[in-house]
Length: 109
Length: 120
Image (cartoon, rainbow over all chains, first blue to last red; front, side):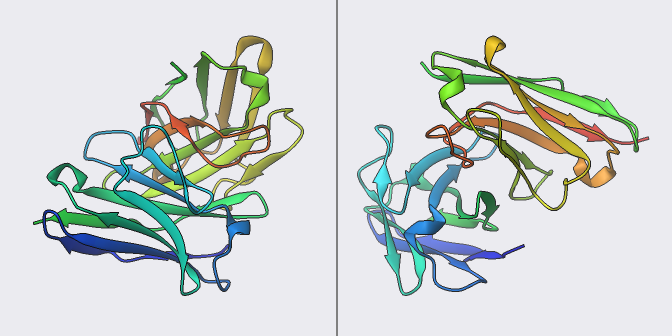
């Protein structure tokens, strides 16, 4: 089974920008891995932010964006808010089987 | 509002069985894949299983293959996760989620989760 890697933790200043990345042990991440990004706050269920690399939902704040970057998929937060402090997870799909990354704890400080 | 609601969690002894249910509302259930994801205490998300909209294809994580079975009853807008030979490391909050389309194995709209504890 593939391993999906994320930064364990990152810190961003309020109003600042940060990029979280998500890589695959099998090689470059492509749109064919159907990358997703999720936000989870303590005690809450996850919330889906991004699907298929770049596509947002109606509930996704405009300050979040997705991309492919240097063989990985990335989630960029521009203009961080205190409420963005959370755990962020990505997932990649391998012939129908989904693998989550280990999560990135984002601190807004 | 699209919703999914899990039920069936509880305390079970090692080696035992449990069936989780996921009841869906406000969408045409048979048009969407359904997924189960779990989260052990203090740990990250782990994808468990998915079933496509027509029920013909199912997918499993290696950690549960041969022990867990996913199914769906479109007439009841409900998905199920039958869990057998349960182990302590199956202890987790189990989330059900609706996918984006009929062949989606990724979670999109999440329930609030149901807790499974495997302990003697």
